[in-house]
Picture 1 (tube, helix red, strand yellow):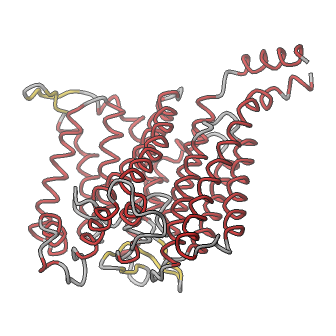
Picture 2 (tube, one colour; picture 1 turned 90 degrees about the horizontal axis):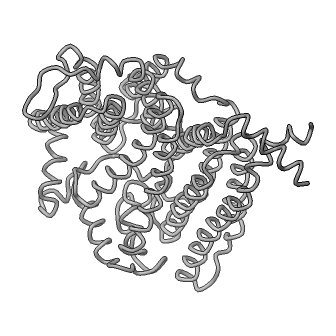
Amino acid sequence: MSEVAEAPVLMPAKRRGAQLAMLAFAVVIVMGAYANVGLALDGAIPSGMLTYGLGLGGFMLAAYLVLAKFAPWADPLILPLVTVVNGLGLVMIYRLEAAGARGASATNQLIMTGAGVVLFAITLIVLRDHRTLQRLTYTAGFAGLFLLISPLIPGLGKSVNGATIWIGFGPAIIQPAELAKIALVIFFAGYLVAKRDVLALAGRRLLFIDLPRARDLGPVLITWAVSLGVLVLQKDLGSSLLLFGTFIVMLYIATQRTSWVLIGILLFVGGAFLAGQIFDHVHARIEVWLDPGNPEFFDRELGGSAQLMQGLFAMGAGGILGTGLGQGHPYLIPLSFSDFIFPATGEELGLTGLMALLMVYALIVQRGLRTALAARDPYSKLLAGGLSFILAWQVFIIVGGVTNLIPLTGLVTPFMSQGGSALLANWILIALLVRMSDSARRPPPQAIQNEGMTQVFQR
């Protein structure tokens, strides 16, 4: 009977070897890129390669051990994919630091990666059943709103590069919106599960679309007003777009009503246009987006187009295959280690490297959406879908901004850009996806017991 009791561990153990091999392969890819940078810059393997390799490998091994113990049935691809992206970001920051880019620090990024893994582990250990978060729906909503507006509190908020999106405690500053996005997704999921039947009711029909009832527009209008407040008061277009877009998509997932998406697009475009006509900082962003090559916009103290154009030139110089790691000039791009790490990577890895990087992000999102489809209850489906979308939406916003597809925002590339707040929040996000994946993929107890008996007889 003791051997049968071990069956829940024995069954997923068949996949653990493959998962550990994929994780080791991800670390090897990162260390190969790290060695390539050193060879290109100095003609020798970097002296700190062993330190960085053991550091990254040790952190990921610790994450794997916690996952194997507390979420053994989770999707085996998520952690290796995140390791590749996080590791390549670490390599690029090291490359920029070696070239003298002011503010770049690979050591700090490695330390924050370790802190992110710690939060990943704590989340998996403490949160044994993600459905308990549903009982904290409104608590998460209030916490998310407080985190979102906390930079506006006098004496607490800090303005950096024209955006009031930071709070400071002595020399340390954090960006609370990164944690707010997770809290708000938890709130949206709980709220929409409770109200989805009401929100799915149809009102009048316009052309081929069933419009929602006017009395049900309240949640959308409130979220729209909050997102516009973030845009106007904090000058944070990225968080505004991320917040409203995520709510609309989760509303669509809950109700299957296309009309909500159309209403959301009209509200945000209309609000952004009105804000662009009234507020100078929004108007300046739109001007730069429409005509980034205008010399009048280059030397603007805040929100100028110099860094955008430098990033576009860098990606153009990289071409299809790139200049090679350590052989370009990405350090010429302002904020190349944070907001503009994507074009900095594009110069040295080329379009091919960027497409491969986007495919890794797409695979992470795909595994999250697959978890949402496999989930057994509506709350899990909404929460997994919302967290997956918020990651995909953030990648789209930052890539769209640095390629001038949409106005530039203050968001950073997930797991790659230097910055503690975003990195820590994204590791928590991944932990939540892993927890839900474990729940969705775990077979019923009877199936586990039968498998355990089979393994005992095979022995």
